[in-house]
Length: 112
Image 1 (cartoon, rainbow, N blue to C red):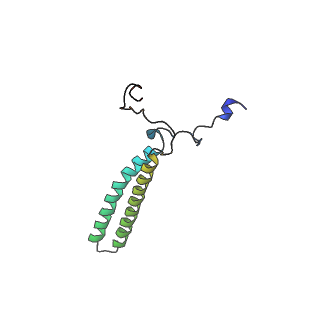
Image 2 (image 1 turned 30 degrees about the horizontal axis):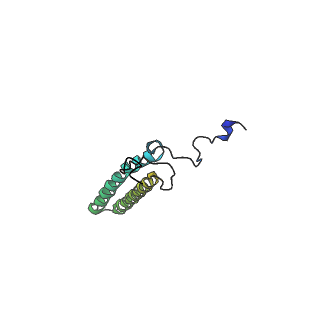
Image 3 (image 1 turned 120 degrees about the horizontal axis):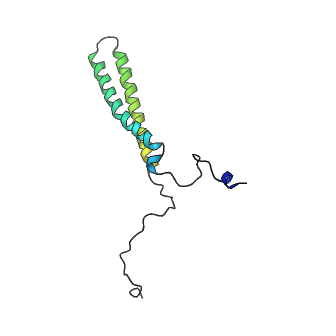
């Protein structure tokens, strides 16, 4: 078996360390959800106002549109929560953190 065959192919989960935070597919997903959330909130509000003003037969359509926009806003909000949770560092990770500067004595003679 060659050395290249033993290496995992890029893009497959090899159980190794995660890529840096900004390089994965989560960053664009978070950006799109962050844009969609306020847009759908405003759209749901405008549709609800239009349903309140409209006295014709189209009122049911405005209510339906407001409900769909509110549902889409809830999905965007849930997606933001999922992405933020996935971007947190893994607490089980064995990668060492930054070095800790001990403020203890400088020499070993003080310990004895």
